[in-house]
Length: 172
Image 1 (cartoon, rainbow, N blue to C red):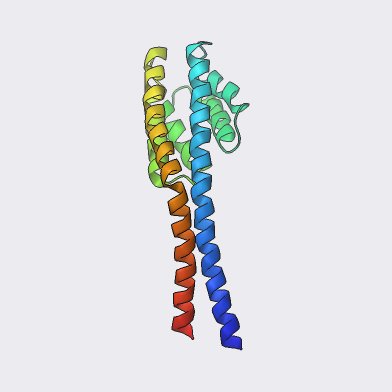
Image 2: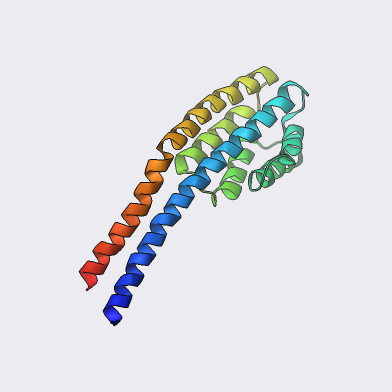
């Protein structure tokens, strides 16, 4: 009886891990869409309002959800405070601090940091082109996650259950 309960707990816990991975994939997709929304707002502030990047970031921070809103506020504050510091360095430090706990993959974060390297020192036209280029890459990644999403989520859940069953059989 005790072995059966233990086996059931192993199956359920592994199934829960698979389900958690599935939820993490969905969360990643939402976070990529939130970054896309943020960049569209930022693009509008830079091109149409002709705002400087730190001021545009503060305005956009009010329109999006945390942790991206916190990230934008902190980058803006640090950019205003440390005039001698390179913007790309501030951007990458704050991105690693505020976005490391998200569901974004390492490559997503690296691409986002690379965007910051190109943003800070250019004129408005180059900033607009840089954001547009990143948005195109981001659209492709979002479409990929939407297309692969249902199959991957189902696979994560099935693998979790199968791993649990395999472990339960091995332990019993």
